[in-house]
Length: 393
Ligand code: LMR
Image 1 (tube, rainbow, N blue to C red):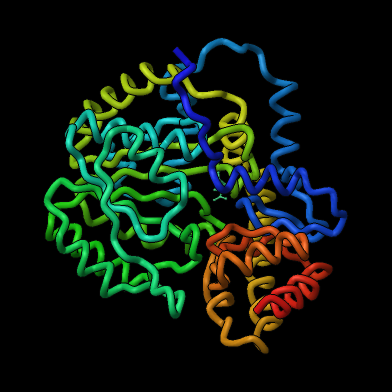
Image 2: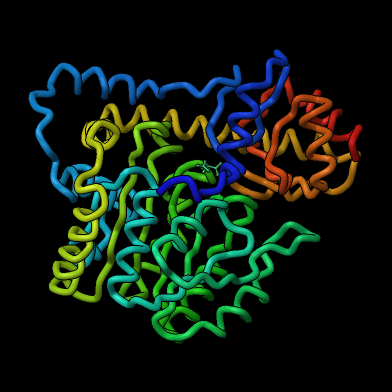
């Protein structure tokens, strides 16, 4: 059965991670995969996560199944984190959250759910978008259409082009939006632009689907969710895929959440039962550990305050690096967009050949598209990276 299969190329982001690991040069710099790094170039376990794990290990009494929806406590906490503590959508029973294996699990279960609701669903994704959006959504059999998002000259959002293309979407189509920290461009919608897109979504009867993978790493937990919350308050239905990989640093624990917002509580109950049957037929139940950590942190005032302060520190560090990087590149042209963009990523706007030279000649790793993970920089490597970029430009 297997002999007809052809060797596939690896996912470009994961391939780059492997090539970086295999590189034996001691001064190599990883600006590739989207993983937060501290000043020492390490991806630390957050202190709040360590403490929650210690408590869990001490207090855990069973490894019995959690059920397809995962932990009710985690789900409730995630609803409040995403929508805000006192959001009336939660009070009115119009929301449900299920725990998923990472943000990827949430995205894929959403895609399977869309196909169940409407077998010929079309989902509109931004150009560019995260490399794994296409396989996750297309793999579930959805039709994928693209809307222009980034002006490649200015590396800013091309909002008129986005709106013009979305005017061509038909009622019932799904529009995927990045909640904050657009991956790969770092170019986010302003609040006014969220309002305008919301109007278009309402007028055309589209279903908004928000990928919230970086809440807290753009400007702050509340600020990063402002557009999503506005949209959620205006539309009858919406879907949110959230990840705890970056803001809790739980990458390998595969911790995420999928939220459904429905027009009424009764519709939401029925829709959630369908979603849970999709889960049961895919992976049955999510892994427990990462979600238990998040639930422990968000359910304890002191731990939560500690986590928020750690996350604030990560966010501020990225903002500081963005300014320092833009300043260091200023002699080469206008890189001010790096300081204005948010989250881990920005495009440098250099060619694949220049990216290759940086990797092979200088040991500096970034995606072929020139997407850099700004969080991979630090005071020590920044001057070297800037001068290497200067030398290839
Ligand atoms: C990235 O974009 O680098 C991250 O989201 C990691 C991944 O799985 O691709």
